[in-house]
Image 1 (spheres, helix red, strand yellow):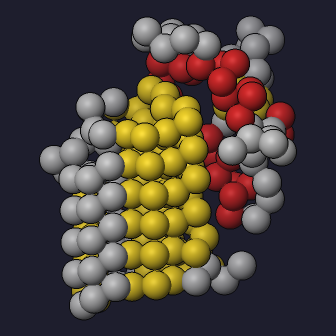
Image 2: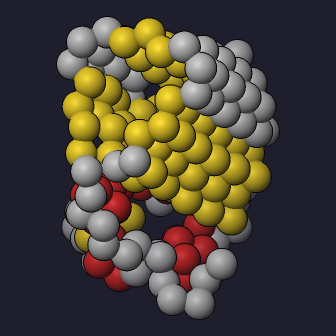
Image 3: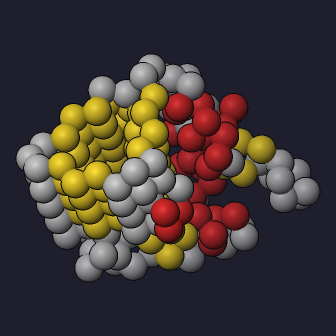
Length: 174
């Protein structure tokens, strides 16, 4: 799949369509919607992304600033936080949402987890997060990093597989 890296600031008027993957290492401002055919990821604080419309991608991996005035739609969304004031004014729709600082954004997902609590083995009121992840995702995205014999989701392996165009969801899952 085509892979593009944005290393210079870009202000785009109207909708922006990127057929493959898009890595963002500089500010990106889109006055319309942003449609990425593959994975959208940023390089932390260097890759600020502002979208006045909707954001649609196969997967989104963000450790930086992501401001979307509309909805975010993707199969997988992994980010530091989904704060509706600073990230998504609309609804976040995905099969899987992993966030480090849950903030109460409107999320419509098959599985929505506080990733840090999950890694620490806490459920934080969520029933069976490990079981739901194991039912949704292929075994290849789980590792035994905790040393306790319990396989845990490795979000970097998950995203590496998505970037490589390899499957991450089990067959037969929605």
